[in-house]
Amino acid sequence: MDRTEILDALKQAILNYDEDGARALVAQGLEAGIPPLDLVDGGLSRGIKAIGEKFQAMEVFLPELMLAAKVFLGALELIEPTMLATDEGRPRQGVAVIGTVKGDVHSIGKDLYATLLKVAGFEVHNLGVNVHPGKFVEKAQETGAQIVGLSALMTTTMPSMREVVELFVARGIRDRHTILIGGSPVTQAFCDKIQADGYGETAQDGVDLAVRIAGQRGRPC
Ligand code: B12
Picture: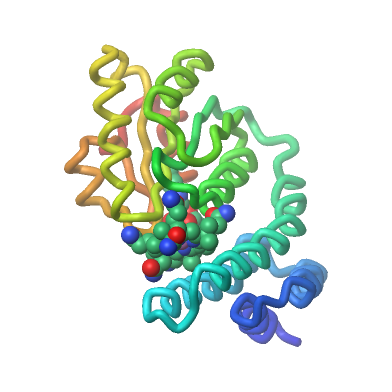
């Protein structure tokens, strides 16, 4: 199979809830020299996005969503070591605290962001999902993190991002930490509205922003 066929088959493996198939395709893709992030963006993410659309159209339901997520995570488990292998020898960039905001249990995009931050040379403190605003503040202070990354996958949990920003303001430490936000419903307009410091449409965009900030110690917007 060529590159396009492997990526299309990966998308299809998610749609078929075929965990073994997805893992075999990832192994084949890595063997063929396809960059690990291309396997995610060009294959797995396209598949899970399609499942999300089917869910919205009520063609599939929660159990199928969970199955598709399991296939994605099983494949990602094989991809991540290859991503992290490129980590060696990179200059240290700084410290990042990341998590999915209160009320939201979606973890895949946030964990991918964590992995790519590590690849770029950040020390990452991943707080997990459904993280209370106070925990972000506490961990950022404890670790002296330059970057605080917030993920939200639902329109209903985006307001939790504003709560985090407001808590940093209320504690008088807003200027010490750069708050970056992301997740499929999040936009630059929302970032501006809640006065976060930056928005990454993809995890890699968020990493590029974080690297720029760590280099400049300034604010991207
Ligand atoms: C998989 C999935 C699940 C899985 C999650 C498993 C897991 N371990 O994460 C499970 C089954 C648990 C789940 C549960 C639910 N889900 Co759901 N889920 C999805 C689905 C299909 C895919 C999400 C995903 O993992 N995408 C793949 C990753 C790689 O993409 P990503 O997260 O967007 O991340 C990328 C970027 O956004 C970015 N990024 C992400 N975070 C950050 C952070 C920063 C700082 C930066 C810079 C970048 C960044 O980087 C990533 C790569 O580039 C989406 C559909 C969609 N289109 O998003 C629905 C979706 C998000 N879910 C939805 C819903 C409604 C639910 C439930 C409420 C369903 C229910 N009835 O119970 C529950 C929520 C429970 C809760 N309280 O959170 C809706 C949300 C609608 C809304 N209100 O906005 C969606 C949009 C589906 C739909 N079309 O209706 N879900």
